[in-house]
Length: 180
Image (cartoon, rainbow, N blue to C red; front, side, top):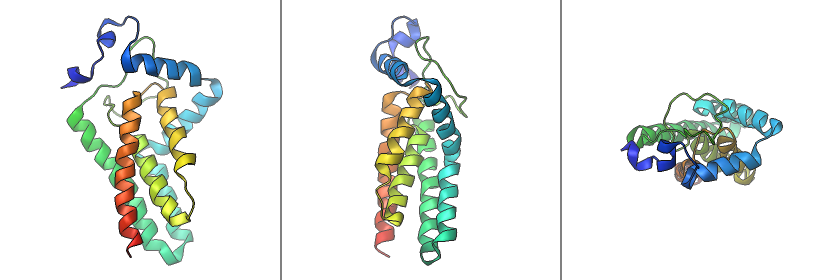
């Protein structure tokens, strides 16, 4: 199944085409010392959804009236992350591997689709928006998605699919929380 996802330019290692070309261009435009440092920080924060889960626990500690909702939301973020891992194991798309793309951070696996960072970040943004009364999606999601491209560890469709998956999971859980 991996061959379905492999761009011919990746096999030949020549001039990038398709998503490899888009990724290389995005990385070339966005990459600077500052953005790489910020992207690495986001990467570490979002690893295994730990940072987003921790923020949910902080919300539960601070907002005692809605403690249970914060805990459900935090669990939802972890659930979204788990869903992305399950999809990765089925799809098995390899991470970018082309001379035009510089990989700037280590990853826990060699699987790329969907981006688990994009999934958990979007789920957190949707769920925590409902609990804070502020739309956090525009502030949280684009930087995380861009960070995965800057670091050279995901194709554009990986981050878009991850954001879609996180949005669906987060939206379903948020709807259940609203009904309470």
